[in-house]
Length: 303
Image 1: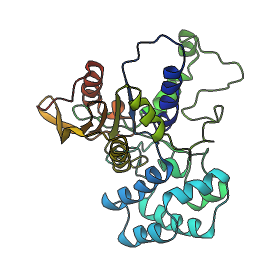
Image 2: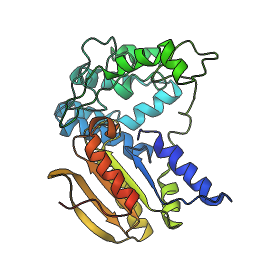
Image 3: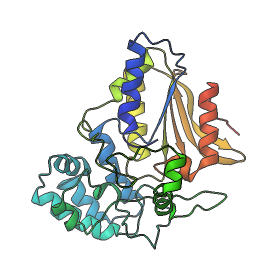
Image 4: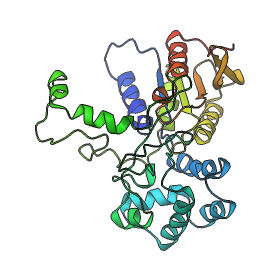
């Protein structure tokens, strides 16, 4: 689960299919994945507005002058237009610094020096000029569970824990050339092909007979479920797949775990209710129920 799994998981899967490797590949599941740049990025704008994070006037600015896909395209080339700088400075004022866009219903870590501006402030995306204009710092995330509320400072505590020498020794961590462990770093440069669509790769996997589950934590505004759901729907239509499980709620225990739809008994979409960008971290029970269904090859439970 994570944005970039929408690229390397389908690409690796297709490589396995086309190779001579004798692997008993039963299916794949990808969560909150980046599958098609324009659709995924622009769905964030509607998500901010529909969830009350920005005003009508700010939403109109996004639609008229600089939407999220244009912003990210400019960010990748580090060449920002005056339109985007102006629009997103205004949007950032309304979003504020204390909303975690990976999990919009979660609290943030008040003791952290980080600002949860998420994708706006990711150092791999944005240059100092744009980051400064948004008054943002390095991105962070927090989680919230249904039965036991998670610690919103878990990221800070995890960083401290994994930088302990005894922990690194126990994990047999190789520290050659690395001074400290960090959640996000620039060692692996994986942003170069973000604008390359992989939804067609998913289609090739489906056509090869491998089941695919695409799921979304519905409280993630970075890769919102609305864009993902639309992409899966259009892919099913392009492949000529008929709906075999109509759009309906699925259950974990006696509570609604999310909503799901299945096409041709091979391509599935599901939301995980109340889940963040990293669904298992914020909704472990519901995520486990989804993974069990995927592994068993059965539809998500109806009750």
